[in-house]
Each structure stands twice: as structure tokens, then as C-alpha cells.
Image (cartoon, rainbow, N blue to C red):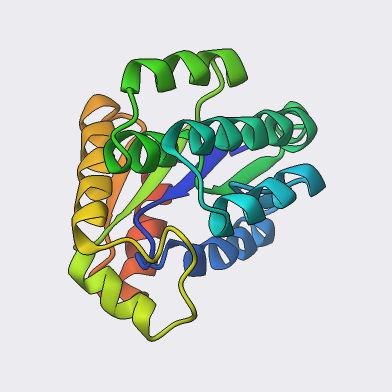
Length: 202
């Protein structure tokens, strides 16, 4: 799958991040050049903005603008060059997360997010998005046993239900791109779902 852009999405605690490296290893074994990256982050500047987003109180507009500023730098410096080389890019979150978290979660105007999306990265969209869908209550249980929560992970269950509804709305709007993964299943089962989606794309 040369030049493919594949994103991993889901609410905090869905377990998406643990499946990126195994997929990268499998693709590399099949002869693909794979870049693994994340959002917010992926460049020195974007990583600094990530720290601010995760740990500094701010309103929804500031949050959205920082997310897109980090994304602009990330796309220019990392994602676009990798795709131009024909690499496969695996990214932990992309713009769907912004519509889910800042849009549905924070209640930020979706039309304004759409305008920012077009302004920041134009027509660039993932070729495939794996949405790790998990009930907010189960996600919260997983997070409580994992690590100290950041500013987003500290939100209540109602917030994450809104975020989940935002992901559902994106999946309904882009059914050819976004594939749902049942993240409530055990890790091996989730991994098999991921590989089944990739096999169907060949």
C-alpha cells in the first residue's frame, strides 16, 4: 500500500495506540516503508504544543487553534513529505479527533472547524481511518488503572459520551474511509479486526 495514510482514532482509553506498532511491524515485514507518528505532535514544535494542550487550562477556541497549528507543522514537515516519498504513514489521531473532541466534546462550531481543516491541510485526508469504538464507562475504567490523567482524560463520562457521538457522526459522514473496530473486545480480537480491515483493502 505505497503512499497510504492510515489514522487511528478513538476516545482516551480505547487502546488504539497499542495496535499501531504491531501493524507497522507487519507492514515493514511485507516490504513497506512505514512512518509512525502522532497528533498532537510529530515534530519538535508540535510536541511542545501537545504539552500545552494536555496540561495548560484554556478555552475551546484556543484549544482548537493550537491543535490546528500543531497539525499544520506536522503535515508540512512530516506527513506530506512521507506520502510524497511513497511511504505508508500510520498516525495516532488526525482531524477526526478534532471534530470529536473540540467539536462534539467542547461544543465548538463544526462549520468553523471545517473551515480551519480546509485552510490548514486542504484536501489531505486519510486513506483509511480505524475507529476504536469503546463505551465511555469502560474507557474510564481502563484509564484509571493506566496512568495519571492529563487535562482531557480528567473529563467526566458525559464529555466522553459526547466525544464518542462525534466519532459516530464522522463515521456516518465518511463510511468509505472510517472503519469501526470493536475496542471492547480482548486485545488479540481487536488486532484481528485491524488486520481484517487491512486485508480487505489489498
